[in-house]
Length: 523
Image (cartoon, rainbow, N blue to C red; front, side, top):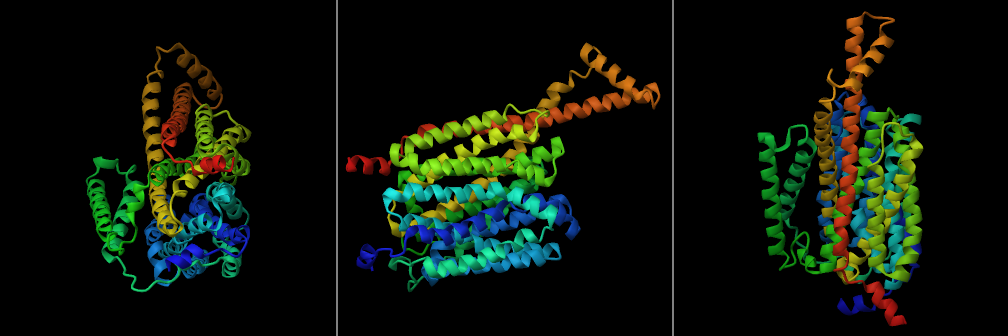
């Protein structure tokens, strides 16, 4: 088997193989966010609250998160190409089920099945890309990969908003059907299966590892979803559930470490001994936290503070997609010329600048004022995340890529969930703090406040009496104060994004840049 693996050569042009691989990635990543703006419509259809409707997103993320670490096991059990094909079939069929769902339980079951299918797509696709391209062409391939991984969640809200407003919400799932069928056909034709990824005998299922993994992720997701509403650790049941989550996580890690010695574990944690993989994965977790949380809070800010529709708030993300596209084109060229570490550093700095630009916005902005910060944000995200993904797995052997991508995507999924929850909490707490600071100015001793009250009261006195006009003026000013406090919650959060990104920069120079070495060797 080892000799065959060493002699194996991919016969199909890797750029042709990239077509079904990228198509599958785009479908999976798009469905992470395409439901966001359609939740109010689905909540109305199923007669549930807005809060309960968030489980439509959560169920998908938890199901895919549980499956991702099992990708290496299923690949060995039935063969990687067969499992990739099966994942596409499950995802497509589940999309049909989601579109036809007529109750909340049916929708949740459909989304869980869709997550089970989608969970096998991303790790295998990433592993295939690392295998089919030679090292010198990998930067260009990873640039295209990053375009799909990052751009799809960004386009999700705008695509979902447009489809929901012009057709109806079931079509956000029905659009997967033709692409799923096309992807299935192209996969069978153009995705090859090397000897080391074929079906293996005597593969054992790690049932105990799977159990603790499922308990860990499910309980953690509930804590993250409901923690802010329940005052986090001020709530007894949140503390209990968090304890269950942490105990399950520790048990899962211990079981994986023990069973990895015999090769029976779901994931092989020994790859964290590779410092490129360790640092690169940690950096990607932080970036995924920022990517997914910013994609959630920006449309929310535009809808709640500025009164934008679901479609317009989703449309605001398109400049970020354009930034991603430009950066993907530049990344493939610049990495080959200058190496990964300088381009990654530049990308992180650009991303931090994007966060600071968002930290300057106010309630008088138009949709066009969001465009430039979003464009900068998108450029920085692709330049940094794509290069980190490239360098994190560049020193691993091909036979370790499936396991590595599974482990990496598991922790990135967890990071995305944590990041979104932290962002929601930061916005709420910062808003409260700024409201407390500003409310002291609403006093009769403040000349500006008194003059404003008199002006607004005068405008109301044409229709109501003096006392009522005075109270209406106070209510209006208090409403403006709350709006400004909420705005500051978003502004502070974006500024903290910039700080978090800058903290990654020093660690980049501990990485081993193989592309730079290859360039020196050629010279």
